[in-house]
Structure formats: structure tokens, C-alpha cells
Image 1 (cartoon, rainbow, N blue to C red):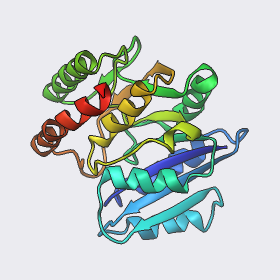
Image 2 (image 1 turned 60 degrees about the horizontal axis):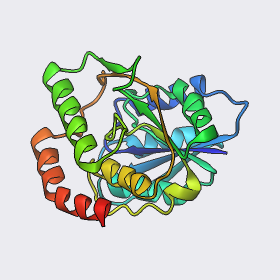
Image 3 (image 1 turned 135 degrees about the vertical axis):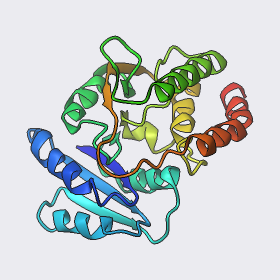
Length: 231
């Protein structure tokens, strides 16, 4: 079974559209579940998701009473996942649910399959140019210092073999948790594959990514990441 883990924080403007897209676009010939982690939302995200759980048995809701951050939302969702394949993705429709089948199929000869903006056929659409260049530069530098051939280390849209992902330590509570998970797979020489993703800028709601704050978190975590990678 495929478990799709979806953190959500104050996403009332898009969560219904996202779940409708999942119901419409994920093929039913493979068993799957959607685990939505409501990360202490202060809007109607929880109530809107509950409307779907009442209608669709394959959608489950897990609650955080207070906002704990992306890393802890992923940790909770991964622990709750029942499938032997776990897909992580955003709830803002920047990651297309229709790609989930292709991501899962990529695990045929890999332990992690990454929806990558930086392989042939991938890219970003309607994303501000400065964000594109910052992201490209950051991934290029990460590739150098962590000594890997993975092009998109910071992608949040991935499929994993659950047996490995459930062992990955998640210490960070912010977006830097994506790097933390990737370093576990790199350090343990697990097999990776990348498939192209054309990431769209979000159309609904407000992004939770704060560039300066996130950049400082990466800088503060860099020493810990380097020690972990090369110890």
C-alpha cells in the first residue's frame, strides 16, 4: 500500500482543492491512503479535512494541538503511515497528485524516488526568478559539500521505501528536515532515482516558506549536517 503523508498548516484556502485533486487523479488500481497531519491550524483546515474523512475511508486525519513545524508534522505522519511505500508531498497543489503513481513505480530499483526540478524535463513555472536562482545555487552547494549526485536535495515531493524512511531521524522542525532525511539515505548508501517535476507556484493561500528565517536555520544546522554526513 502507498501512504501519502501530507502536512497542512492553515491551508483552508486550498485543502479542499487538494483533496479533490487526490480523489480525482490518484488511480485506484493500487491501494493507498492519505494521511493529513493538521499541524495546529488556527483556521478551518481540520474541519474541512474531516469532511473528507467522513466520505472517503482512505483519507485519515492526524492532529497536532499546536503548530510544531514541518519536520515534526512529517515525523508524526510517517509514524502513522501503514504502507510499505510512503510519499511525502505539500498540500498547496504545487505537487501534482497525478505523479504519485510514477514516483512509487520509481522504487522498483531504488529506495527513494525524488520528484526533481533539476533533471531534464523538470523546472519551475511562475516562480519568482530570485527564488529559482537561490534554490539552484543552494542545491548546487549542497551537492558539493555532501558529495552526492542528487540534483534536487531539497525537494519535498518524494516516494520512499517505508522500511528505510521510518528509521530516518528527524531532529529539525522546519523545512531543513528535507535535507536531514536525504542525508540519512546518502549516508547509508541507499539507492536513489530522480524523475522530472515541473513545480508550479502556489495559486491559493499563503506560503509558509520565509526565506531569511529558513536560510538562517539551514546555516545553523549546517555543522550538524556535516558532522552527521561525514562521521
